Image 1 (tube, one colour):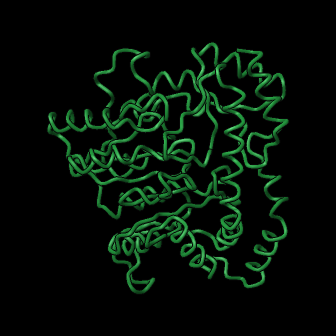
Image 2 (image 1 turned 90 degrees about the vertical axis):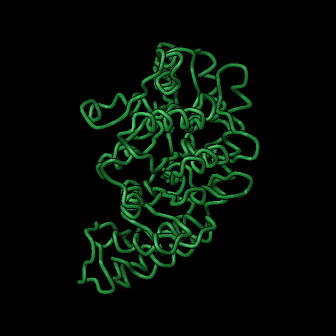
Length: 379
């Protein structure tokens, strides 16, 4: 059994993907070939924004956004404490200060009340200027943008949507990667829309920022590629990956529908046995992960061992909060100052109790039933 069966996806789309790869090879436009711009147009249309700028990976996408805004030393950037490392890593790399914020116990996403509290504490301290909130659409579910936008507007913060896991999700029909002032995603193979290597994209409706993003991704170029007007990066999406993503994008809505059916089956079978993911009314997840919560760390670890013994893969996303990461122990970061132990601080508790189960569009009902039966027997 595969945790995320990319092989089965390839077999399903094989004819079109093979043709797309062969076309790139025969045309020999390996870097910034026509498929890249075609994909950017299609992605922008799919998300519902004016501009899409592809790049080398999801981490670079976040970096490009911060560079376009000129974020740097003295700036406070608010980041959920329960997320993948890159959400905060990029902030530190630009010389700004990550300020870690607690998350919601049901959705795993940034908590708007905790965000406002962190902003007020930062303003009261007076050493940093609040600039950006990095929202993370964790496990495929968009963050609570109605609440976050209200806070961001009140305090004049820009919203950087980290949609690395959320591409394909939506709120009341509005697609993920359209909620931020700038939004980003990742095309890492295991993401909802993944390529066959690394890749990423940045989305915005702002013409000025889009022009800056175009420049920064190719060494800070001006009107001519040998006229470099700013210090930039080398972060382009390969033509081969763009061609593969075009094929996958055309099949993507069907896959999102399939993973929602898989999630519904999991939730139905596990109801009353374990805490299952919560999808608020009007929200739709693209289910990068299906993540349950156990009552204790010991229960989580015991269940994971039992699943492994039965040949069922599972993963812990994530075992350590951002503020506990080794790299941040002596770095310029703001840790949660007012938490009162593990049970009261949601992010730390989640790190001890979450477990993600196999999840992909091609997971058979019989496999889901076997996973759930094993799980129920071992909790």
